[in-house]
Image (cartoon, rainbow over all chains, first blue to last red; front, top):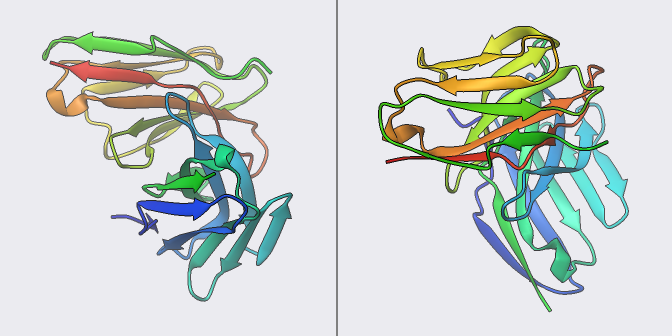
Length: 113
Length: 114
């Protein structure tokens, strides 16, 4: 039962261009969404988040867009840098008292210099 | 903020043995989570503590798995009678006890069952 889906296992982008990572979810009870970045041999680290009552949140080069009607969110990175090369996980929070976070399978981003 | 610490980093064990992992969360964080990650997958939720109370357990957590957080600080995850299918990265995360605080992950314990 994959409630959070990242259908692109990998993405390759030229340095300086925009990276767009996509995520779909199925559970209407999710009320908060986050993106995490993971480098090899490290745990995931928080990148950016968005509440279900908003449709956009921006932090520097990173912007997350939420389309609730389509149950879709995306992460835009612009301009992309080689240091952005990592695995990106989309995550959604179920506020059932425990704020359980459900993760997608991840998208590996390669930014070519 | 010294980060979330997990020990050991790696554990190799023979099938049928018991293993125990430890997680030390960020000191002021009330919530502690255990996740499991296998190759090509995202972290899968196992269990969650609010202070010392274990509030939720995943169906993934069979009877062979038990987690504790005795004083609301560090936590242990024990796997009894390990099976090869238990081989995975076990991740611990903590967060503040307020609203939608993001998870802070440790670097994980990689378990290999031979």
